Image (cartoon, rainbow, N blue to C red; front, top):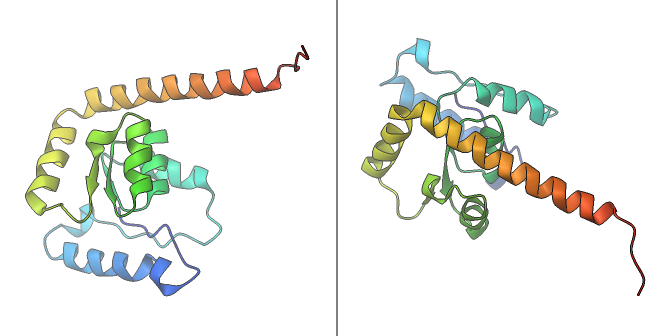
Length: 153
C-alpha cells in the first residue's frame, strides 16, 4: 500500500509525485493484486490512516508521522530518516532499530531489515504493543501528575 501523507503546502512537501513514481516502478515487479495506491482525501482523519496501516504487515516511511501512525496501529514501521527528529523520536520511543538514515541506506540493508521484521512478525508486533503500553502509561502518569493541585510551600 502506497499513500502520500503530506500534501504541501509547497511542491517540496507534497508526497504525491514521488509516491506515484514509486508506485509505477513497483508495478513492474509486484503483482497488481499485491500493490495498491491510495490518494486519500486531504481531510482524512488520523484514525483512518491508522486503520489502513493496521492491515499492513510493514510500513516503509519517510514521514515521521506515518511511522508513528503505523506503530500506534501495532504495525512495524521502518523510518527512513531525512531529519534528525525522526532518529531522535524513534530512539526515544525505543524503535531505533527500525530507523535508517536516508543518506546511508541501500537496498540490501532495507531488504535485510524488512525480511527480519516479516519473519518475526508476531514477535515484532508484540514488542511494539508492549513498548506502546509503557509509553501510554508514562503519558498517563505525566498527565495525572500535571492535573494534581499545586501545593504552595
